[in-house]
Amino acid sequence: MKKKLYSILSVVLVFFSIGCEDWLTVEPETAITGDKLFTTNEGVLQSLNGLYLNMRGLYTPEGYLGGAGCVESMGCTYTWSEGTPGYMWAGHYYSDQPDNTNNTMIFQGLYNVIANANSLIAGAKENQSKLKKDVYNLGRGEALAIRALMHFDLLRLYGPVPSNVDASETYLPYVRVNDINLYEYITYEKYMNYLLTDLDSAEMLLSDSDPVLKEKFETMDVSTAEWSFRKSHVNYYGVLGLQARVRLWKGDTEDALRYARMVKEARNEDGSFKLRLMTPADTVLYNNASTDLTCYCEHLIGTKCDNYDYTRGTSWRPQNVYVLNYNNTFFEDLFAGNVEDKRYLWFWAYYYNRFGTSGYYCSKYLNFYASSTSPKNFPIMRLAEIYLIVAETAPLTEANEVYKEYCDARNVPYIPLTESDRRERILLEYIREFCGEGQNFYTYKRYNTKNMLFGVRELTDEQYRLVIPSAELLND
Image (cartoon, rainbow, N blue to C red):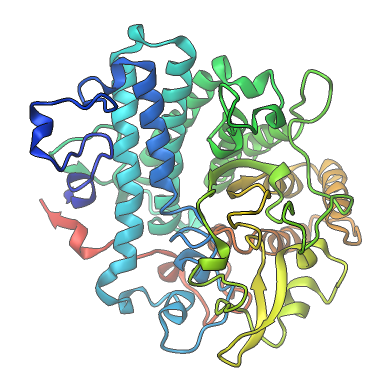
């Protein structure tokens, strides 16, 4: 069945849309017109930067797919009063959302990024001979990875529980070419094949040019570096991480483990690890402007949030917090009453707000404000997930070695996993670790959990699928 996807037709390409009629006759000195954009190295990099700017509307502390957005509410991180929009998201009452407004913003927002990525992918390919090799490989490679990431989050939201796929159903379009014609909804298998093909291509391109293969991430965390802030991009190791995440979702545990090992064991030329877990030895003080509450040393992929100010946010303002979990059993249920668990100490703070409601709020972004020197990078993927993938999928001896290392880093007692209990225990570790990062709904969905912690009601497959906005589609 073919349907019209309005998100693609209405996309605003940030480098091509012009509001002044003079543009037709006069080309500003600082602008690059659409037909020339991908013929220059500058244009490709400008377009790539635009993709990340587009992503900030989705992946930020208050973005739709961020730490205080509707997808985080769908993971039941916070407590909401009955009848509020947050309660509707937490209860997975999607049809009760007014005019599907938020659904449309998510659905359209993801496909808009895809449309811009498609322009870069095609434009760079067409003009490959005019571009520097590294610019071509990094520009096109990152765009392919971004296209895969956007499609994967669409599938995790609007697609089926991965353990209950209907092989004959057509779920979503995988848009690889921008077109005014109708987009075909395709089967899960075909969709996943396209997605993995994009990741394979991105991996190949980045493996040939990404400076993170030869340099340390830390040396590129300055604006003066030729390829700066690689943790704010989908870099080579981020692509390997996505390979592990996607393949685990698909049920390919063997390849998921293989890719997770590649990330975990990646080393610099001096023998040090490319990435490391944050540990109790790291300085984490709430009155320290350089605090690393998002575990930046673990970031594989992120969005740079230099302009985000926690103190002026609508949900996260520490002097007026209203995104709270005020469940009476929060601490016992999530952290088993362990006050030494660093995830409790690092990621949560207690607050009594002006509405008279006391509870816990996520403090991961407490130091995202103008004068802070803290790394202001919203995490889309972290090394902790890689450790948990290994603990979930590896042979038990290896799994326990990695799990012990993880427990030591989080200052929790190590109790060996068994084949009978590791699935349930690792699920809880995911939830503890990734609160406030927009990931927990997806973890519950992959596990097909019937009752989420702090959930409003028991869930079925239907509640794990967002409703595709009716305004987006027309039958052919």
